[in-house]
Amino acid sequence: MLLNLLWALGRPILFQMDAEEAHELTLRWLPTLTPLLKLLSSPPRQPCKVGPLQWGNRVGLAAGLDKNGVGIEGWEALGFGAIEVGTVTAIPQPGNPKPRLFRLKEERAIINRMGFNNLGAEHLALRLKGLRDRDAWPSVPVGANIGKSKIVPNEDAAQDYKKSLAWLRGMADYFTINVSSPNTPGLRALQDREPLARLLEAIVPDAHGTPVFLKIAPDLEPEALADAVEVAITTGCAGIIATNTTLSRPGSCGRVEEAGGLSGDPLWPLAREKIGGLLQVANGRLPVVGVGGIHSPAQVQELLWLGCAAVQIYSGMIYEGPGLPARLGAAGYK
Ligand SMILES: Cc1cc2nc3c(=O)[nH]c(=O)nc-3n(C[C@H](O)[C@H](O)[C@H](O)COP(=O)(O)O)c2cc1C
Image (cartoon, rainbow, N blue to C red; front, side):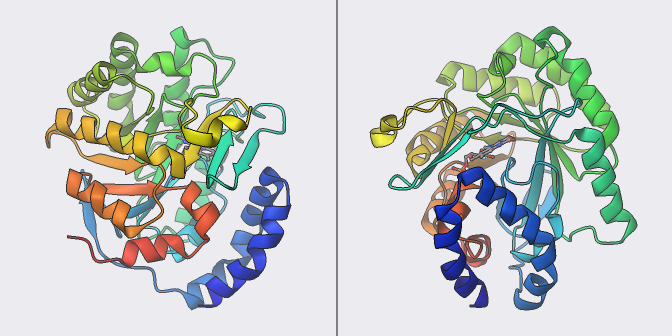
């Protein structure tokens, strides 16, 4: 209730601001507000299995909102059933020049070309260690999403991912290998069958048993999607997270001439289609976490009916507010 009131007051102010400034302000305030959030909220407990993990409910935080893991306790208090931080890279990097984050308010969408701005895997590892040392580790799984450092060529990608893993091993409950962000030149070529197989064969054993998920793009053709599923299975991945942002510009989104990945409402039809295709290929052999344009219990239900194990959200919360995870997580699903 109070959360809704805070959102009703805060939203117009945040939406007047530059999108990235509003994002940074929210992240700066989240740790301060966390004790209050903990007092006010009762995170929905509807435990479910996602591969080897037990999520607190069906709705997780998607990667990219909290790249450096500054608000983990706050996300738990808001009711997420799992929390994915990152993307982090082995080499800390500033990301692309600003502006690089754009709201498409009418379409309830976002275009971003952040380019993995992050403080690095070592920094995230220390932060996660701090939580563990303080006995403040959430009761829901925390995943670390890992990407390739921009200056590292694709031939050396495996070594770069392994460096991040070495920092984060033992710290996160699961890892996500991100080969699908459109804002690191050449990254998505790592989704092709051969390079993907080489990469995952090198990385998965290095996780020493911590589950490794693969995150893929919605712009893959059906054949490439099928390849990604088969490679994920043969290399021992624990599941697939689909989808990342799209380079396409459905409907009226083309009116905004900014490069980058599109997320939010207009991504839903494409994400849903690709998730459906993935689930058919996976045929129960591998859990799929659905993500892309989700903002209502009906959408969560649709993906669960299709066969997803759980979902993640990002853009929906920007438009619907911080009450969304608890609202979606608490809904009764069949
Ligand atoms: C500003 C922004 C930054 C993002 N950064 C990352 C990232 O660093 N790593 C990643 O795997 N996905 C990233 N994503 C993609 C989201 O995790 C998610 O897959 C995508 O936005 C679709 O979900 P949505 O429509 O609920 O936002 C980012 C999305 C946005 C909007």
